[in-house]
Image (cartoon, rainbow over all chains, first blue to last red):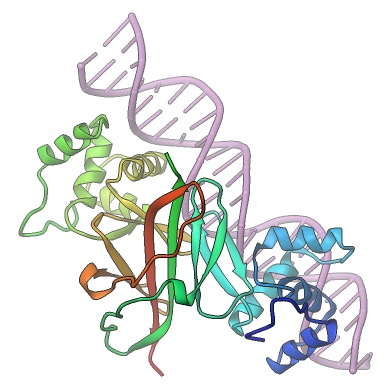
Length: 143
Length: 143
DNA sequence: ATGGCTGCAAATAGTTTGCAATGAG
DNA sequence: CTCATTGCAAACTATTTGCAGCCAT
């Protein structure tokens, strides 16, 4: 679901349909991860997802969360972000956008396309095609 | 030094001066790392540095390589790049530039400033100032 | 002599993997 | 019943840390 209206949280059925549309079996655990992640645009770590789901009463293992996240990423349902070298984030906003990263707090904020745009792209190496552009604007506490 | 460029590889003395200018004690190991890293613009992982130095006959431990790289990074002598979530690269090109990352091969190529430029920057969060901008152009095998 | 560095090895943390058990259709 | 999926625990990998010994000053 590339553009979910930000106000509408997807129902269980919508998540199931989304997974099936990608050929992903809609198991209980995958649907739980989807419901959480696709509720709104957000960046979550694997640990945050596990904790959040368990607090919510879900029965899911660490391995399954990782398997699910990788599966989702392969199918373009989430985008993996490596801004902190010690942990990965999974971004449920798959529209074109970039990030502001506060290096002091670790906070990560989305920036929409109209606000940042590349003036030009370089020539790509022979035999390659564009897969995407990641832009991270690093900020620090002023002072 | 594994790859001695024919042109302007910094001499041992130049590296020592550089380190001292940053208040970094020019120990044997740090100078070796500097000679390797500052020989030309390049991205190296910690393992590549250890291996290269040891092949070259240096006596240096993994811990010292990491300590040294972090020290260099703190003083702006290298830039840490987290493009691959499993390992960090250290870029000895500290001038303003961005990267093309081949996700199939892992290859990382520098792109100079004139070729890529941001049209605009977003408003930064209250109380923060710009620390830097990272741009990674991801490419894949065409087809 | 002394204080900063270094090397070693153990610790840490995120992620992946092997495999038996489970469960949905 | 059957096959995909899960959970657990162990494995793995990159990086950090604790600490005793070493080295240059």
